[in-house]
Amino acid sequence: MTVRVLVVDDHELLRAGLVTVLESDPGIEVVGLAGDGPTAVRMTHELRPDIVLMDVEMPGGDGITATARLREELPGTRVLILTMFDLDDYVTEALRAGASGFLIKTTDPHDLVARVHACADGDTTLSPTIMERLIDTFVNSHNREPVPAGVAQLTDRERDVLRAMSGGMSNAEIARHLCLAETTVKTHVARILAKLDVRDRVQAVVVAHRFGLAG
Image (cartoon, rainbow, N blue to C red):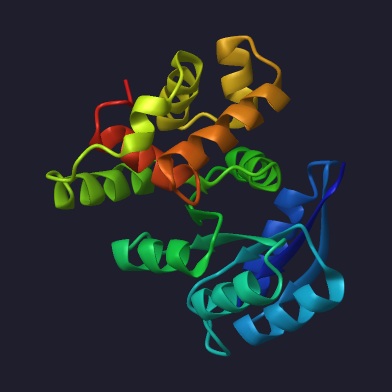
């Protein structure tokens, strides 16, 4: 199935470059371009893309505010933040606003394409350096919390999947690593999120690192 993407960035040249990178993959179609947050929200309502590839700092309206609006108005659309800045405040604000991932613009083109597909498949995706810093921040600031009751409810296979998630693997990579069907992995991930009472994969990985389940 083709992944339909709306590219949002205030720099015309960068938008053109992103289109070239994304449409080099036959499984991705760029359905529109926007230069600011409000325009992105309007075009998302009109075009209904699967993924909005969203910049953060734009003069006509920032991407985090637009992400929060899309989360409220079109919760089925996934937003993948792509920015020059990997500041901790931007990461946490973007995730709280409902973003499904956060990448920096130095991401390798092949990796960007792979992460767009992963996001469309339901994965929460973060650049490795951002994931490490985010985990470190949360683990160090919550080191005295009691172990959640849901941790004891995880099966051995769910713990295997959680460890693989903590290593940054996508569902497809976990399936290959554990010799499982990808649909089975998705079921395990859904059960892990429910048992740990977390919203997404990033929060599940934070829990895994905080309580010694990551490896």
